[in-house]
Image (cartoon, rainbow, N blue to C red; front, top):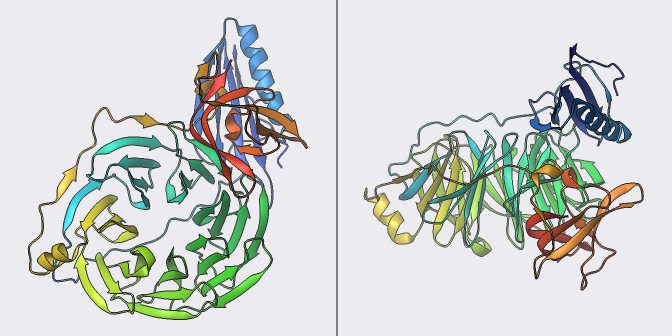
Length: 489
């Protein structure tokens, strides 16, 4: 950690700049406090980024200086140290280098609607009620299945991927944080070590699995604490999927399965080309590769059960429930559908670039593409047959409403709404010091008070109480927040 310091003084203006950068699985972030008369401005984030800013005005300059001193003192006690801005390099971030050639398909897919996000998009999730799309500008939009935009989440950095874990939706971002988007107040649930150049993420029962540029797999628990890591045989690990039996890690030398508890490698299977994307069903994982195929592997043994041949490198893949149909998106702006045995049923152009992620649901295939579009394709047999004959619906281009609600992450206590008493049916939780760390436990009756609550670190304060709409138990013996969070006065 650097021990240099910097301060700029001009009459009543002073600035203190701190950094916390640890080797291995530690943090890599800065914290800057500026006092200008009665105004205190705090700027914070990952080293090398612009970060986020918060400004507070106090009744007197003396109170402003005292508040600033408390903030600096708190960070120093947590391990931050004075530093010189710009001396330490920023976190490594790799953008997938993709090319997108025009489709060679003779027909265009029957696209129902398309929403242009404005930046290349990798993140997608579709559930019973919503479609989610996240792009490299840090925007995550939610839409209904008819294509109407419902809300926007404005995150501090580019979105690598969107993952779901039961009710909860998470966005993995280039700032090294994973944000919980399950309520109107998104928060950073996990903070990934600075030396991890994130490629892909998955979350299963609150356990975060991270694959990276170097071919490592890093596993972090619900309390954002490092559990174990392994380095696979290959680099550029663009695939990680997890379930109760294993974590499936795809890289440029194939797919490796590891025991969930870190007990060791279960199997390794070389694939036909480096893995660029992964999907899973109950008994199989699917790897899309640079050598123009999707391969289905047994979760039990790693044996290759089927190969689905495309005409260009496969950027993404998905299946219908149970793997009845297998879908793929290639580097030439085409989408494919195969029967489960490997027979190609159709190939169509997307009309919107190459699909970087995809998901099938209820007869529709949803794609996010190199031009930043979320595309909804009618994948029914009738619609595809008509498209192959040259008849497709008129694409409806979805527009972003001027009054679309926008939500930003909670990064300080001041950002949280307050209530004087807990509403009926809500749950009260409390921040407590435990084993040198600030944890959150349940105060309300009917819950196990010894279990931790997965809760935003940025708004934890010793002794503070909060009201949440609901808590749900997770298999790992902890609670997850469901709904809004408010500070209890």
